[in-house]
Length: 385
Ligand SMILES: *[C@@H]1O[C@H](CO)[C@@H](O)[C@H](O)[C@H]1NC(C)=O
Ligand SMILES: *[C@@H]1O[C@H](CO)[C@@H](O)[C@H](O)[C@H]1NC(C)=O
Ligand SMILES: *[C@@H]1O[C@H](CO)[C@@H](O)[C@H](O)[C@H]1NC(C)=O
Ligand SMILES: *[C@@H]1O[C@H](CO)[C@@H](O)[C@H](O)[C@H]1NC(C)=O
Ligand SMILES: *[C@@H]1O[C@H](CO)[C@@H](O)[C@H](O)[C@H]1NC(C)=O
Image (cartoon, rainbow, N blue to C red; front, side):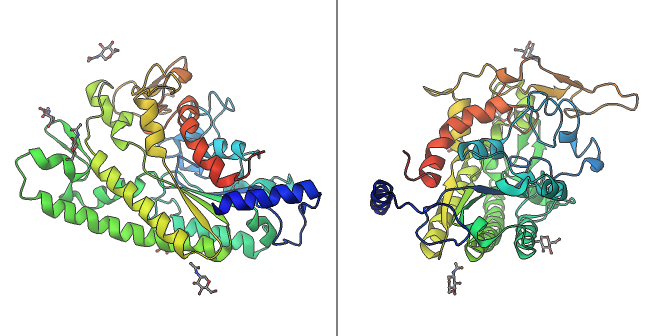
């Protein structure tokens, strides 16, 4: 209702020819429009922050065949082409924001007008055991860019933040604590969350496992809440937070069934996480001073494409990745000591939803974005002409 009234008002201003245009004074009356995009999170949003020097085993996204579709060379994106960040940028009609890592080059080339991308592949809300900057540290970097004057108050006022947290925390958690076997291969069956163990011979341990997982989620969401509140203090007016995609369907898990079914029944745990994202966003929205939050339903978007619901972009290979290990032990882009490829790449990435063991192709993102766009549009562009 409120939005309808606001839109009606701006229409009146337009007709009276008194619309206040962009200025550095940051007038209250100036209508919100997302002009800068600030991005945080992991490989679903990273466009080049992972250090290439980490080498092929870790920074695979900097080696062929990554980037083969767009821009036809590796750029640090975990895809053959564009990722979520690029699609969101194009929705608000800006170029993809420059990665933080190359901000100095960007400064010289005047490439800072679109915002900045702080997301690093492999990162989580907590530390994930490597070198990747966690979410809080990424926000620290954002804050320091503001502190040194790279971005002004006015810039912030006309910005949107995207936070993509796609599951690295859970993977790391399970590695840290093997007793709880959140990721384990039991009798040939891959298990990621304890839910699937309901039917095995360890019914007695299940309540303990679930309790443990829920305690971890409590901690995770307390940290996420603290992190998200900082955007309100900084004054970012719109914050988009992704939920978890259907992790059970990534090729990493479906490979064992020759890419026919999503074997790890973790949908319950993912749904639990996603309900918490919704609740958190609602809570923050109610208590914030300047910021409105959107929980972006990546899960439904991916699921719609993977189930090929009516209207979904047709994709030939829904579970089989385009780029995969030829031996089963290597990863996309890996080579042996002689430089021989240890992977196979498909001829037509656009026929695949998944690119590598865990990431969508550009075509996959495009198909999923079809389902993300309406909510983003009404969140960011409230008065479509
Ligand atoms: C994030 O990383 C910083 C720097 O390494 C560390 O001090 C901080 O405790 C980490 N935060 C979380 C929530 O893990
Ligand atoms: C994997 O789990 C399914 C469902 O619980 C079961 O039917 C199947 O036999 C298991 N496979 C193996 C190899 O244990
Ligand atoms: C896996 O699927 C491919 C393509 O459908 C098929 O050619 C191959 O024989 C299958 N392999 C196994 C082990 O079932
Ligand atoms: C997965 O587990 C949930 C909860 O235990 C259950 O409701 C659901 O039917 C299971 N799905 C499949 C495909 O086994
Ligand atoms: C909103 O502003 C008040 C007063 O400045 C402050 O005490 C409060 O912490 C702010 N709330 C958030 C969520 O930042």
